[in-house]
Length: 247
Image (cartoon, rainbow, N blue to C red; front, side, top):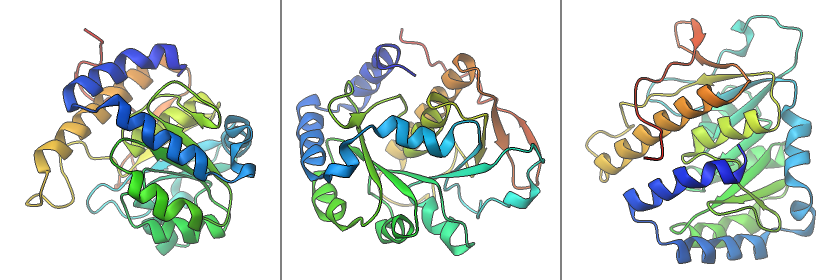
């Protein structure tokens, strides 16, 4: 999604969650300064090279989802590319699956993401107002290919093609660069991993927005968006009636 189309949705998010934009800008500047020279050049073409015309599997971290059984996908004659949303990287690696792309704001098991990056995964690091310390700690530790994103308009090496949580941002990314179709694996919008943990209501509010935004993506992209369930069934994405308008 082009930024001009995405911006009104981000303004609603910023208003609802109280994100101070000046903090977003500070974190973006930090990330931009930390990216090595090779990570600053042409982020979208580098990502497109990994995903365009492929069957993209976006792996989320829904409770009990486990790793995607790639061998069960219908044969299409196209190569498959995995996109792991943050903590789902560890799930993939445990099953011997190395993601093509990892989309992360560095609030999960980042050591797994560093390990996958060493094994060839491109890591798209997202800067936001709350993760400056994580950026400073982890970005210099990635040995492989990196790219950067943030919540505002594309600037320098930092892209923004829409999306809010790591999972839906990965789906927006795959659609933007021309994946052939997108499978969503391990997505659950109604449960969090630790129901009794701190911040449960805020996490559920973010999942509601992830559902809304995937509804928006399904309605606006020509790329087929599919839900892949643990029982092996695959169906066109239908996220519900959550309103994703900018009213």
